[in-house]
Length: 223
Image (cartoon, rainbow, N blue to C red; front, top):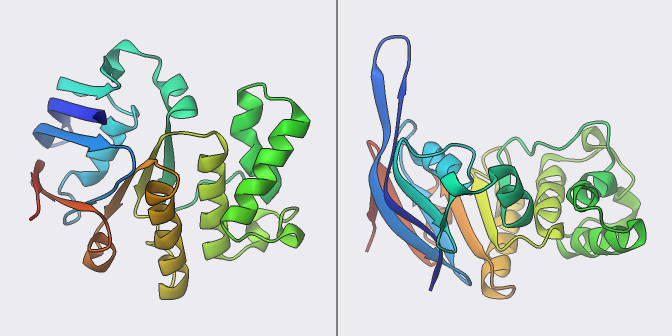
């Protein structure tokens, strides 16, 4: 059964010169335990679709559903905090917090006890290959690959069932990119999460369980 679905979802906005139909009448579904890739050229609408799936934007027509509840009928901040984690190409770590503090942040928002939050945090940091001597470092003291793994650990710490990754390897070298892809696949196949990766890299896409192609706002499943 699909945990995340769209039904005739569209998103239109107005820029300085024209009306842009970024996402056009998209209907699709995503289930737990699988990794998906959404590929397409720059400007095809794939990042806008991710924003709809994450509840960062609401469709201008149609619906996005999490467990049969439309995002338009829920608190989307709560939805992202508890159910749908977003991982960005630029990492989006808090620069004045250590790696450990970054990962603990969503747990503090949930008002989890400090000792329990720290235990979960350290478990997730270790799971993505961040060593204990790195836990107290600030993002500027970590490599790009290490920062992305901290960002993944932060997404995992909250226990979210859905992981949405927007070009997660875009700023990484080949080795670090491969490590991030391995982690994302493990989340789907071993931890039973729903992983959706936005990427322009067809090599990465080929490793996912399903591939969807975005062309001019239209989403089509690739065979």
